[in-house]
Amino acid sequence: MKDQFVTALAEALEKEVSDVTPQDHFREYEEWDSLAVLSVIAMIKQNYGITIPRKEFDTLTTVEDLYIYIDSHRE
Amino acid sequence: MGAKIDRMAYYLPDSVLSNTDLASINSGWKPEKVEKKVGIRNRHIAKKGETALDLAEQAARELLVNANPDEIDFILFCTQSPEYLLPTSACILQDRLGFRTDIGALDFNLGCSGYIYGLALSKGLINSGLCKKVLLLTGETYSKFLSPDDISNRSIFGDAASATLICHSEDEHLGEFEFGTDGRGADNLIVNNLTARESYHSDSNAKPELFMNGPEIFNFTIDMVPPLVKKVLAKNKLNKDEIDYTILHQANKYILEFLIDLVGLQKDKCHIDMLEYGNTVSNTIPIALKDAIDRGIVHAGDKVLLTGFGVGYSWGSTIITI
Image (cartoon, rainbow over all chains, first blue to last red; front, side, top):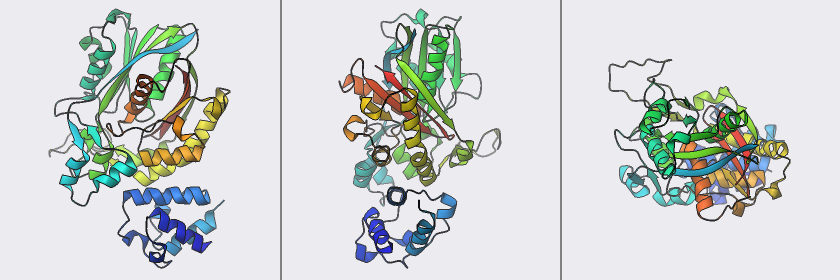
């Protein structure tokens, strides 16, 4: 599932899959802007059926953090 | 016995803020991406000294060309940019539009859900026999709450006003309504300075300033809209396939496309057009409805699903018959 998540995240951010690794700080991506945030929220809702409250989202730093959050909350 | 929309008009201020204009303010801002993803190229912006009340007056004048102003029994004005703290903007409109003095007039403060609530209030007034013809106005100038360097909000919001005449009719054209409210989201879209909570008085030249937590509003929207649509369909004893056209609040193209997919609606039967207007808050639904009627997309007898959602949080939905 982690590979699938990385692929989906790369797609949402319009990045090459090879440019996304679990250790990346996703907010530091060049593509990270207000639209990218919406794309990631949409991808997570579509693929995993959850929304991450902003307060909790703000505590997540790396791609792996995102994945761990989703894995422990998904439907 | 029922109520129906008799006619509609809308008014856009003359000044236009284009993507090219915004790109010249901030070189890092990408106009092509905004047009492609957000679906907005231009927004109309009220001039200094031009208010939501002025815009609503223009929309009402256009609506009432060749109409007898004495027929209006009630003015409902939806705005979050009132002319003054007091008096009520709708009272000023009564005078400007030359209406009778034995009519009712009130403002109500709602944003993107406002048009749905306005239709519901109009239906209630008419069906209870309190009056026969309601003038429902929406007018908004969020641009006045945005600082010049707030590019992301300035790229989204546009100013506008609409006017809808709602009349008594033999058949019911305004269907059942579904409402929703969750004040826990109040802080996520707010103008909280120069208010009762803060202070109306200021030593500086401070202006009201709008704050929007976009991601959190998006979270709210995607959690709330699918069940809302489901409930309003059930209340009206209709299924998705029986809806001829759907108009969701035109927040932005990206959000709409995602919602349409999430709800499972047919994209070609859903309105997505804010290219020349931007997000005009309570005006998006009436503008879209009038455009859809004028362009021949929606015809007499069609069932149209209307859904508004946003600031409050507040949401509402209904199904009307054209």
